[in-house]
Amino acid sequence: MVAEENLVQQLKQNDSQASAFEVLVSTYKEPLYWHIRRIVLNHDDTDDVLQNTFIKVYKNIKSFKGDSKLYTWLYRIATNEALTFLKRKARQNSLSDGETQERLVQNLQADVYFEGDEIQLRLQEAIATLPEKQKLVFNMKYFQEMKYEEISEILETTVGGLKASYHLAVKKIEAFLKED
Picture 1 (tube, rainbow, N blue to C red):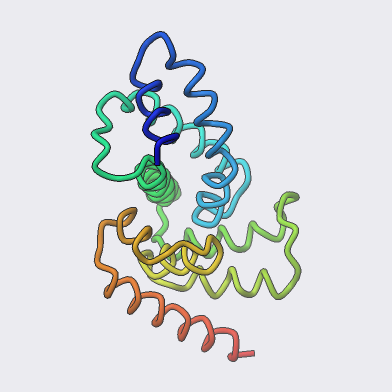
Picture 2: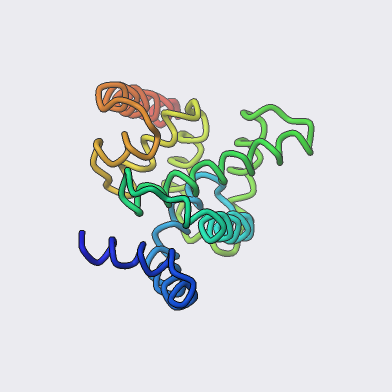
């Protein structure tokens, strides 16, 4: 993509970096927000992680080699920042990852920015029971409608493994939703 290559070049040049970074933020702010939100589930936490993501991108853009798409690189950073945030939060509260996810889902009901109904809340509860990789794959495929090839680049894993993870995630979610 020519526009992306131009943006990367502008980001790496001191005289155009500030304006190019504004373009980058305005282009990717919303999709990255929702990607992170599906991982951390809380609006305020999402804003913090998104800010950390853009800080990391700004500090490291000159070392971006272009081996992957800029989009893929941004999503990889956002994913890692979100997972690191959750692990740090779990450690601070002396909770397991599962207990942290449980609390996040419980807090969704109180989150003024959560506009979902009871069904969407149940879906989030079901997703929260999944192992980390299945959760990521399900969110990226189901909500963001990413192609397996894109997810493969972001998570640095095989397409076959992703398909298996997605299939297992769907089965577990279906089983969870049928429990009622």
